[in-house]
Amino acid sequence: MIPFDYQPRTRIVFGADTIERLGELAGELGARRALVVSDPGVIQAGHTARGIEALRRAGIEAHLFDAVRENPTTQDVEAGVRFARRHEPELLVGLGGGSSMDCAKGINFVYSNGGSMKDYHGVGKALREMLPMIGVPTTAGTGSEAQSFALISDAETKTKMACGDKKAACRIAILDPTLTVTQPRTITALTGIDALAHAIETFVTNRRNPISITLSREAWRLLAGNFARVLDAPDDLEARAGMQLGACFAGMAIENSMLGATHALANPLTADYGIVHGQAIGSMLSHVIRFNAVECASLYHDLLETTAGTAGFPCPQDGFEGLADFVDQLVVKAGLHLKLSDCGVEATQLTKLAGDAAAQWTGNFNPRKVDAPTLQSIYEQAF
Image 1 (tube, one colour):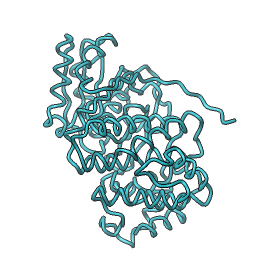
Image 2 (cartoon, helix red, strand yellow):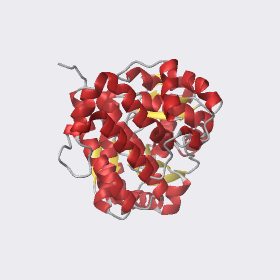
Image 3 (tube, helix red, strand yellow):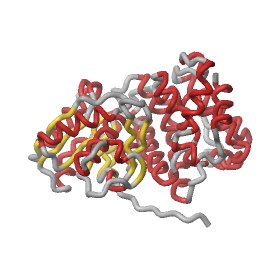
């Protein structure tokens, strides 16, 4: 018997063109003035304009904060808070990828509770209620719309801070797969690998429970079954829908069971070398699977049993090696690097990177205990 405490906080509205309901849903939350947080790429694709127009049709005043960068920092949040104070929103809308939604959550922490982003590093640090928020993901990756955490990098130290509070969870998540069709192939690849890692890692963490296991299984089925399809046929809306729903389920699994060593190893690669998160994940995931299999090979086998007999999935009898090989094949198909040396990482820096990885919070939830020496050995295998 594994105890758990599960309280869904996010209403999920899924389907093609559901972004057109943004104004209606915002109105149900009682808002008449919204701050929309989005990034230049999403704005250029026209998705932000669709969202703002939907708000305005419902009589909701919308103000756009567009100074969102990949891997948002404390500086981005501070700029967003200054913008929010000028317009006094009653609702926040994160419209874009994980960066837009995380930045919106970060703004919400500081705007609603004061102080600075560093004050909320950890869990449950917000003392006051926060503004209601709607998440509208335009990628199938982070699952941020289903989580109560904002990942914000310290602008000075480059440390990625996980700032979590149940009050920060989106009240509503709008999953509209039509918004993901315009993604460049590179973004599809990077976010897809990240989402797949979420499904695999959450299935084996030491915090796994019946709820997270159920979500991880379905996320695995949807993501592993559709990732190659969206790479080959980017206009396949059914495949896009599967990826987006799978990423959301994986995000819900994270909320219930956290992540593991793959993300602990990936974060320093982004901080020190500027390696995009999805690429860092792609280089590390199969090595972590093999490392963890010493203690949880049976769990990986159980995950593969979920899709046993389905074409395109690894066979359960191939076990963790089949799963690791399958992951590497998808990384290659996505056009990403398998070796850290091909990403510009220097062998002389592996010891430092391992020390930084050992300080990452997510490593605490890995099914096999990790420390700086073991993490360095995984970096060396990936090098």
